[in-house]
Image (cartoon, rainbow, N blue to C red):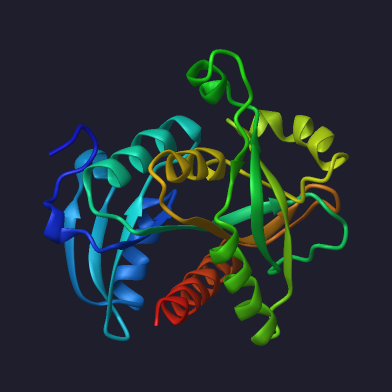
Length: 235
């Protein structure tokens, strides 16, 4: 047992979906998976393993922000026999042409956090997605006629940095999240293919935002798409 996660090696699947909210884990378990078993609830950050259309998968909460993400992402990839990680969540768009409900696939993840600079003696570490996984997910989105955008995102530490994110937008960033940078960093550390699948629920540029109920529907959409596309890739 680690600091953040309980469970044994056989309780965690080789494909792990990460999300920042423990309630998202519970929603996926209740609505999309069968034969569900929860293996973790330390700090109420739930993690479960179940089956989606006969394929075994795990879903683990990693908390909000880079510090939480760093702890949970590193521990689950280091302590268990994980073969692929998929980060699924909502995000804030940074481009006029990204509509609410559009999907965003991060190629890379900038960050306002100093975590990686501390790790690498002041040097900036570029956290990137696994290209093969990203390319296949993109093809699945196009095939399903889902509006999709590919590009860098910026993982901020808190919403007070939303305005700072505009500087990243001027240099190509297409969305804001909080955990992608540390999720990709952990995946690269352990040599595990990592990919992110996000859905825009607000837009900093147009100042549009979804209602709370619509945000839940948006997360449901991205979760189901992620499960379908990743498992099709693994078939």
